[in-house]
Length: 107
Image 1: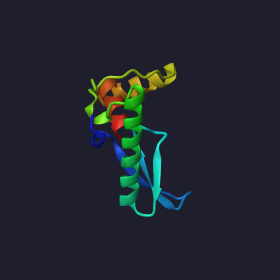
Image 2 (image 1 turned 60 degrees about the horizontal axis):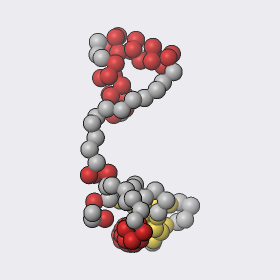
Image 3 (image 1 turned 90 degrees about the vertical axis):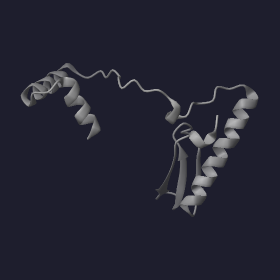
Image 4 (image 1 turned 30 degrees about the vertical axis):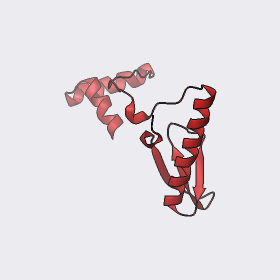
């Protein structure tokens, strides 16, 4: 597996006064740098080292999010009164509850 397939992000950290590189599949890892390019390079290097270490110890390595299969379905538990209110909104709009919930999640 290539560490290039992981989900990387660089953002500004006001607390640290630097850019921080992050990897969604390894939420405990980060890398601080003055420039965003350096933060990205740093987090990629840290992830590479962690994956190498995990491989050598036989640990399970997280699969890249980009390579996972998503069915498009998931269950959400909500209070009955919220369910009722959403069902009423869907009926008033002439759409299914599924379509209403999907539109609200996408917004």
